[in-house]
Length: 436
Image (cartoon, rainbow, N blue to C red; front, side):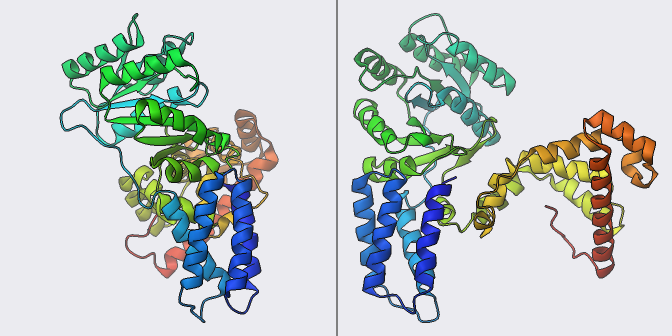
């Protein structure tokens, strides 16, 4: 996420770190380089101009702290201003005073609206809501079926009908009231902002459904072009927020930094992967921290809290105290780690780790192979790995599609892990030992 701009900004701040003090001259030099970095990231030029002016004014007027390096002082200024640029604070979804709340998803074809509808429904169900997914796309073949399949895969109620988009929207509200479902998430047909017929239809759907939220769904890789598209949608249907999809791809940051500043609409969520669980709340201060290569430890902790089974963690703590950690326990930890999302994204949330991973792609397939190896073991082998001799290793390798060498390596690493746990246990594991 934002690798290109993060790398450029890191270089700028490193240059400042070598200076003895922060002066007006080197502040302006750094500001010029930051301006170029933002323009290369496809941020809207008017947004860049305003941002750089505010950075210069803040940095030049700031009280200089001699104990803090110039680079760190500039990072602090840019971080604060970037968080402001991205919206300042988190903006949650709004809900209607009288249910059902209607969330209307709009945007271009191919921006990921249908998948986003499924992700949003899953997110809201996890927040104890009972969403209804609605397909109003009568123009794209199989569009309704695609959303229905997504809804069935996560067991979310689904509604559509053989009538116009406006008729489907009205019918979905009746269905929601009858079955006490809330909110109603309406997936609309993808359209171009210059397609007058489709934009008129969208206006009519909005009027028929009276949405509390009208979310513009944009592909993060489109850069500031997303701003041009969103501007027209905003004029026609009054957007209340935006969602950026495909943030795990080669997103340069232009859309994220331009939308809020230019249109005044908050970014509410970002899609970070292909799975329906790959949806993150958008926190401006945390995203600013990631862009500047400082990680996002708060989001990492929140992910852990959402996915870690506390009862299983307590059981594991007892096992560690008794020095009885087995492959069964290891498999359970792997499954919980996978629930937290792609490993590359998790590592980049650790402060300083993005610099260490520069040019390195962390492949999740390694975890998949380890899981396959453990799943190919018998129950007895998982509990007592010392019994795994040559013939057993060949059988496990064949069963997992791996090699005997990989089995040997995993057994060696696991033995070292058990030894480390024994040493820690003898020193005394603190009460409430956190399990990753």
